[in-house]
Length: 131
Image (cartoon, rainbow, N blue to C red):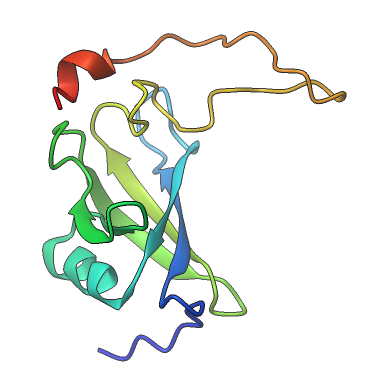
């Protein structure tokens, strides 16, 4: 496999993850952004489910390994500079570890003040992540 992407100095590339257009309420929504390295890309393509590189834990992780909220790859793309990836996925459950459907649930006004959160959590993270 020729992964001729432009990885950063740490060997990572940003991956934007979007819910595919389907019958789910989050259709078309960006659900998260995470980092990938060559190994996580290879594991993603091998399994058909998203794998990432955790910068904080310094290890490969399978999305859903604890929560069961997996991301099945539907399509994927690289941008024109080959330095960012976009994955369209079928997201099961919430994408955000805080319990929301998307990591992008907090809106802000033009002055930078947080707006009220208008959506409900899909799950209680304290029940899902028991560590």
